[in-house]
Length: 349
Image (cartoon, rainbow, N blue to C red):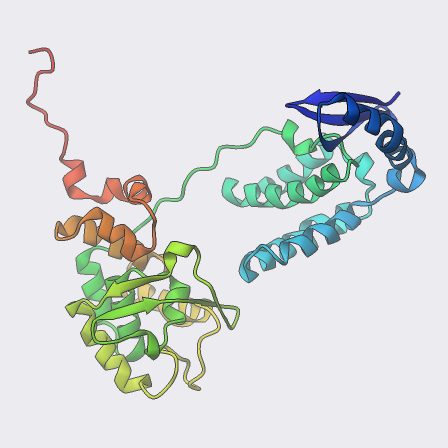
């Protein structure tokens, strides 16, 4: 039996099909005229669609295609690639031919548990969940599912990864052990706090005598827009950075990009730098294995500990709109914060 109900001032249609509730918003306000219009025009069509054999036989593969088509216009290329990889390896082969109406909570729990059994972190499994849930949400929007089954599965708490910035002595150790472009790359990364892709996308035209303009990021052999609007920014040209820029200009000053491969073409992404140069360097120096991205954290922690710069200025240099992120992530690494609690004060006096 189909019915019309009100939720938060909006009229919805509801019908039970094979023991399941199928709901759909009309987008109309709760008025007498709208109710009459729904009863006469919308409800008969909704019943026909919800109970048709075609609707009941739609497979998940249909919504996988819809999901990916929609995400092509909203996600950055690297994120879309990760989503597509998860779908092609872990969702489509096992669930692509499953009818949407037959997807159960137990089936989805099995999907998540499989990822945990393979040793994947809670953060990674949460991404796998996000992708599958997004596909099913497309079916919810179409009225094929009354609600997203993932809503009935409790999330596992995701532990925020610890950052491991380099100390000042470690930075000097890295610089002393390198030469050429890698020396200059490490120097600019640790003295500017750029994201890895921003450093690869840096062009000589972005650098003048007083500042460095961050306008792009580079990944998958393409230039793209920075992570956020605030990531498009102007950085002051610190005296400590000038020596690295000068050395690098002698190497690639006649080219478009600041950092290039041996064939003088720009790097496609940081993977090749990390695997071919960065990790072997850390291993050779006996330093803990850390991502290239840790040099950005290194810049932040050393800037905060120096006491020479305002927190607002550091946030702007890193491309953040507020200082909240800095305090949330880096407070445990700031010496002044560690020693800020007075131990000789009696609060009852």
